[in-house]
Length: 334
Image (cartoon, rainbow, N blue to C red; front, top):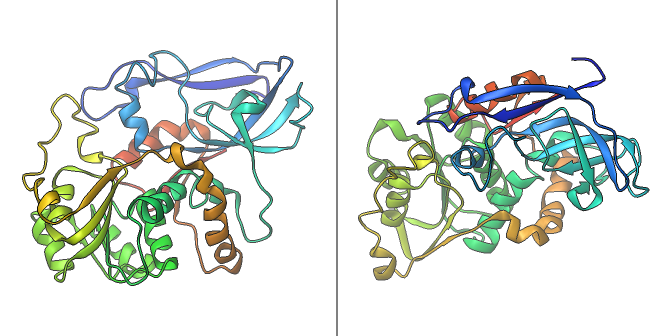
């Protein structure tokens, strides 16, 4: 690639089950010049997220052979909008490409939060990933100090952020699930979970009941399926479930897992189950900054990030994240 070449990743086929590299194409084209009211951004960091897998199956979200999208951080190179100046760092969603043409309404300036806040924080603990965890815990599950919490897929981006944030919020017993012994150890030794289990080691309901023998007050679930059923079983009366994703069915949307057999226990135990989209809670961004930034500056809140170096590895990073290779947030950096 030269300085005059832009590379864009396009989805070329709908996957049958787990995606493969053959479902994507890297397309070269000249770097575009900005039109009036737009700016040219050189992208520096790209977020690859579980929701991208769901988008791969939807004509409404991702059109085949069109540029893909995703949360991205970049630097303005050239601009024909006075509010976007060369050198400005911005966040936008025109990702999966080396350069992007953006308008002012499509970007958010990267705020200057002082020393101790690395750029990677803006796509992890302070970005959509961390905001999903924060909103799920504070607005949906309404976690109170001392309450016991279960986080599924706890070693991923949202899960690690939820663990860190739950500790800042004063959570009681903190339990997580993950997909390997390495991840379980990371949760208990690095994040501060009181207990964690590998969901491959037995029925999830039994594993969760053993890890939380006295029950739970709240759940942040990003898996669905057996994890959701186990959560209902372990919740106390008036428990709350914040449902942020359904990784269990992303590769089998044509035959999703059955609904939890104990779904009616929501009534019997007065449990509230609520799904949410973080885009409906962007007003919580400043609340997240207020909570997390002082701890980032002090070093008390480390980043949980797995970094893939080089845009050419973005598809590999995405597939690796879906396969569980990451600890924390998966990011691609230029």
